[in-house]
Length: 305
Image 1: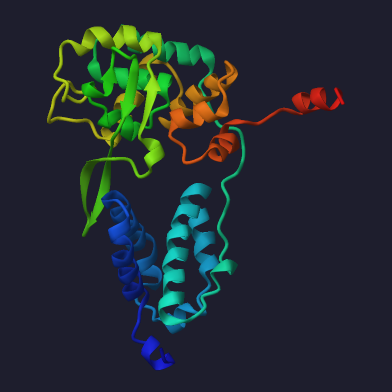
Image 2: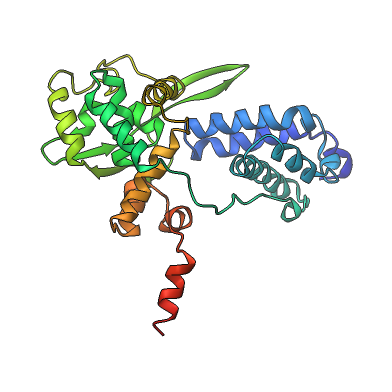
């Protein structure tokens, strides 16, 4: 395509073409999340720039700007979308955006944060003693590592008391539709590995089995209703209230997942099994997040040589 012809192609045109190219191969939630990222992070800055201008645009300045307000992982996810759009443009228009020169932050490998054992026990005892159905989601995450969207999507039919296991088949999330509109999606997870079966701990079985008799198999676990659900944003408020009631300093809901995984490693669970329980795409993710040997451990083995 000639330089003059490229002047008529804007980033908005390019990103819309990319979205249509991706749409048949991705889930609706991914499509809407990509659309939101493009609209919210790119359009104001360079949406109306033509391709010729984009060839000389300093995308690293965007990285620097995003890093001032967002986590490294979030910035990495945003820039991954941008790079994919640009690489699509390179192929379609036979140009070179030099995407390899665009910085993409790597989330730090620092040890994950977990609940102290005394606080974990407080949370567990609170949920065991509670008569509120919605409170048991926190306990489920403590003993399965389920993500908040997976807990919100859980139905009583997913709890197999005969085989003492929990089947994770769906997730629930609010996604961007466009024009400041959002909607809640109850859908299968993005990856096949996220569809999994997790053994049900004895403490969960004893709490959930008697409750299960009161509700329809198709009812959501957190509400006991077939139609009414609690979406992740709302459930975070419930979670925060539980922490307040227990006198525990606020930590993100995801810390429940980290706490579960760390306890599994502490009692000797192998990484392959833990990776499958957590629904990670591969074992290396589990290793990078949770396995950090100390200098003392390394020293002990070196001295055995």
